[in-house]
Image (cartoon, rainbow, N blue to C red):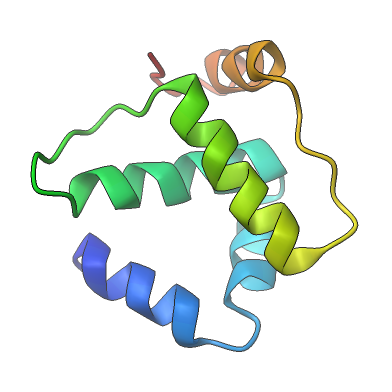
Length: 88
């Protein structure tokens, strides 16, 4: 599925963000996936999000799901690095 279709599905599903979080198993990993999809569907596609972009995505997920605290940027960077995910 192309990123824009995936994003549209995520937004339109009643429990899309809950599912994303559940499938990812971790807020940072879910946020990375969301940030990467947004980047890939932008005017200037990119594959590697910044830690700030991942944090912004984590804020979106946290707002949609509720009851989650968003890690600091350094924590997001460290979590991505431990998971083997490239982040700028």
